[in-house]
Picture 1 (cartoon, rainbow, N blue to C red):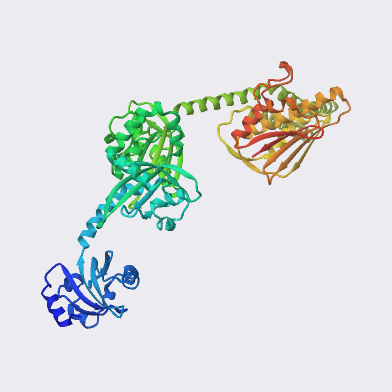
Picture 2 (picture 1 turned 180 degrees about the vertical axis):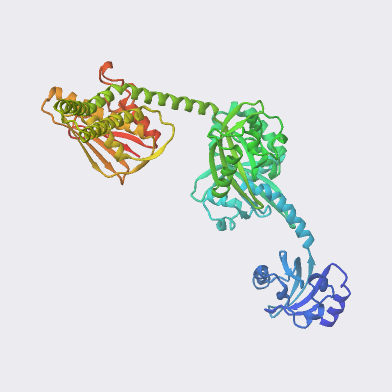
Length: 635
């Protein structure tokens, strides 16, 4: 064994070099026996402090100490190695800063047990920081790529071991990340080793940086994948970044459409060959998105693809970068809200909730306004997040929907007008009694006048009674006018009071039909008059069905039951009119479908009920009961 004094003298002569030499015991504390003077430059502690009892382990970063101990145990207790090399680790400088070092050394054994360690440390902090900076720059786009469900593996090219796998790889292959990182790529690739080598040689010969392989999942299923691999230098080690795409379905389609796709495949291959790094691959996917794509941050456009330029009628991305969505919009949106305020609100919700879908009114470069459906998603990156907007021009669809809504509004209004005859009949019936009452009052005043008994009190009493009757008639006209008035805004209302108003309207027109109302009540948001129209249509249909049944059976006692279920938010209207024949049951909600003569109906009644229910986020269905039909309005 070399004497410590000679070692110290030798190490001191190396004090001004880049390496810090040392000798330490192979004990638990790693007691330092000798160390070169330049250790002070590395960690801020003097040679004497180490010789006085400062242990090597005390300056190693707490997060690295366990790994370094495990590595040394592996070298000495498992391999019985005489030489070792640690992976880079951190030490804590006396001033609190962190330094990166690499350690190499020689182990001396006695009776097959390690006794002394001779080694040297070299400062790689600058190199490590430079590598980290480069890695962070490359990871900027890799992170974006990973968050869009791409499968990512980091592979040691020497032995094929999977060094790192991402969540998408674990989901695809069916193994946990920990299981994948204990496997080699040969355990996943379903081809024999010689065939794998042949394909890799072929790819190298063709200067192609991707491979088509069959990969076996944990379930045993074999999927065809496209593997893009790029060399990556991390510290002093060479790895392969592999990005894997499941193309099983694509391969099947390509087989069927091979002749049509040959030219396209050639151009795709050429494009991929020119884009060998992660940034360029991301850009390729960005350009090939199925529509217009914008990348935004803090409501500012960062980038867009060619389809986005075409959407706005622009020719250069610089015309978009750095600007806001409301810069490409009229001052107000369709609903009257400020375009800037609308954009700010939906962006804030997307940042908080992760996703927003909405329609935004844009203005193209030629001045034309377009309605754009926007699917806005938050994408988290290592250095923050961006908003990813997929956009589609829905101007034509919006116009069609607008025309459809207008058509439906006209149908509803026409149906109200068509029902005016029934309404006037109801008004005439309701006016008959108060008119008779007023007539009798006038006759009474005349008799008092001729009899000499006309007093101020008698006149006031008759006037008050007549006024009450006339006010009742006025309210009837107001209700009729409100019913016919078009509704433009939704509001909350209770269904039971609306149903009772409808029963009051039709009750006197159906003197031989019993109408019963059961159940509770609940609120909905919609158009009260339209709701009443739907109820009236169903009541009139029930009346007609009962009258039709009476032709064959005059003894039938008509009965309509209205049941309001506030728990299930539904309204059942049933009758004993015989039910709906099975052969037409599927068609009764179609427009203009009727089994009655044209003069007896338009065939729009049930269609309008369905349309009204759906406009208030509800629906209608029907089924036959023992003696008739039951129609259910569900909200």
